[in-house]
Length: 436
Image (cartoon, rainbow, N blue to C red; front, side, top):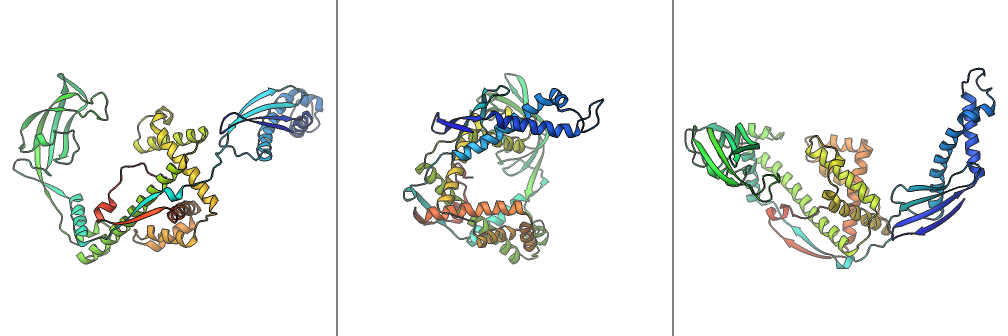
């Protein structure tokens, strides 16, 4: 087998492969002999059909099959021989393809970029620290109460946080528009569910009252056909209901699947959950800074094949998340290219750090992470046992731990500043691309 390689770009390789005719004929004959043993042809007993008849009937198909398998096999042999690492399937173009002659074909493909991860010392990380104060716990209990609020019809004017049952019709230039009308819909004033001005315009309204609201859709409204346009909404208030917060009692505690029946026990459980959330938030923010730093210090070229695969994965995820009668390939690739590029770059950089420092998932950390996740459930021992019986889930946990070890490796060389903050600030999401 003859092989020659041409570098057509930083990552693209054009490889010419020659396969001797003798190897092709050997593979063709092997398939014809297999066919002869089981071929059923009128006038001949199974296994007794002359090879000339077998060749006449089946040689073309056997040759096509043999050529396809040989291209696949010899491509693999060639990349191993040339010590290349393809980043996707090759595009194959036959150069010569005649019976009785050597096969020569060209395989064009991309390779993974070769690089060494560097610049750890240039990475700056602000590592937050915080505690769950009693006031934070009190605030969380109020949030839980508000999330489980009930409403009772009230004979008074509407206030913020009241729930209104309304009918409304929206018109633009005197014409009703799609999605602009509803009947019997429930709306909590101050929830921010409707466009600016809609909920504020109903404060003070009473049951049976009709109000006309002249509003403008935001310029960045998700429906581009309505963005920036002025609409008139005629709203009829059917009922006004006042909120009633639940008492912190055994009935309330049971809604959260907590066995505790007193306020002290419930506070303890909520605090545990808050502390777990706090640890995860701090860890996530450190990780994001490390990943941002690695990307900035190690610009690399991304193979197009990997980028395309990641875009397609994000398309599928988007369809699964938002639903609708749409196929993934109908979503514009441009919507996902930036996120896909970041994911692929980070995947390559993290993999290289693992290789450079010979990192392997630490079994102790794997178990600690599983126990941390299991602690959120009523029967943590059963959750831990389930993980250890499920190899796929275990591999996912090992991947998370390995990524944490990458972060720790970088932190040993990076510039790290510790900062004490409040619980609220520590858990507040950062509006930045998430590392995967």
